[in-house]
Length: 370
Image 1 (tube, helix red, strand yellow):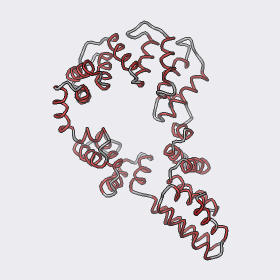
Image 2 (cartoon, rainbow, N blue to C red):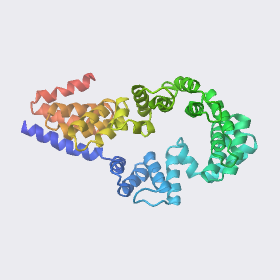
Image 3 (cartoon, rainbow, N blue to C red):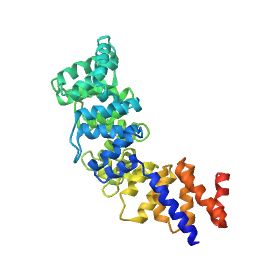
Image 4 (cartoon, rainbow, N blue to C red):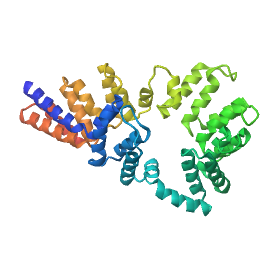
């Protein structure tokens, strides 16, 4: 038995060494707010391992700046380009990495009355705080083709008086048109305008009706605005239980939302984990480093919902239970983690050779796929 425990322990050390990739080490450091220390690992993951998300992380670090990491526009563009080259579906990376090339293309398109191109230019001009140019492009894109980006920015600038005289009625008109056309993330704003009588006659019943149409099936985040109607006596609908229920739905949709903040002690990761998001379960486990029982619970959930690293991180917490160790390695292997599969075969092979039938029987489980 002692020999088997030693074999398992040695295998776990090897497995954990392989499991900690540059990207995963960088992720752990970011979780601990050690952004500066994460840079070398993130760079290796981006350049050597070709992990596009690590390139994006680096672009974001140098774009916006982080504790210990100074903003560097040139480096940001470099990493955004690398991100886009690895994954040209990432809109932000491509637009920030290849801004000049795209700007010329969009100018030609907008002149030819392509509404989407006008919308791209409106966004770019707004980011540069050139509100007059942004308004011009947004109005054209919204007027000629009801382009989503154009209309959203147009409504926003009408509401805040940027690039144009402030006009709540026009802002409401554009937002309402977006909501009616199925741009559901604009409906909460329409609900807010109705609830508070902004740019339209106050109508709390209408506000509730619009928000109930999108919450939760069409746009779960819209449940936040609906919850606001129930949160206090302001709208004559106070119902704390209903408000918490709605905030929870919105928080499950986005763990960084204001809805999560409203829920107090219940962390956003835990709520998202309840919604079977494996990465959130993994993050929740990391947040409970001083509570091994909770760590194991959330790593186990991450493993159950399909994240092999959750299975592997659970191993040190169950190392005294040989069958539990085998269960997690087996699950990680079934989730296509190659190192876990090699370790599984190594442990089972040695156990069968040594006559340990309890562990050897795992080979039959693997063959049967159960």
